[in-house]
Length: 112
Image 1 (cartoon, rainbow, N blue to C red):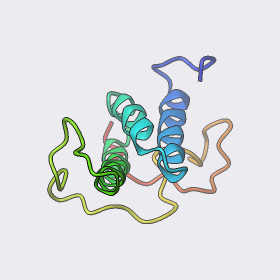
Image 2: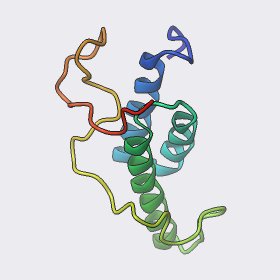
Image 3: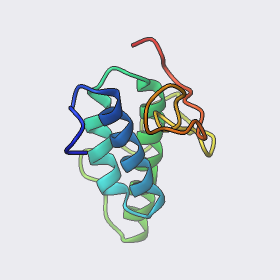
């Protein structure tokens, strides 16, 4: 990610993909940190919020399994965000973006 400008869409997509990958790899704490950074970029924010919600839920489940609370996060997360379909991407695979092959789609908030 060091080669991409933080204001570029490539950087935004990389943050989303990293956050999602961290969650899927079982590291929701790191995923939450990355996805909060990603939310600061006003592009497909609804998709990012949904992924962040999943990471927060995973962090809460991990915390419950280990007998602790999740600091700074209320149980249940944000109302109205129940999750997202598998394979949904906040950036990877958008057509017309160099380095993205289009296999993930690119759904979400396109309002800017």
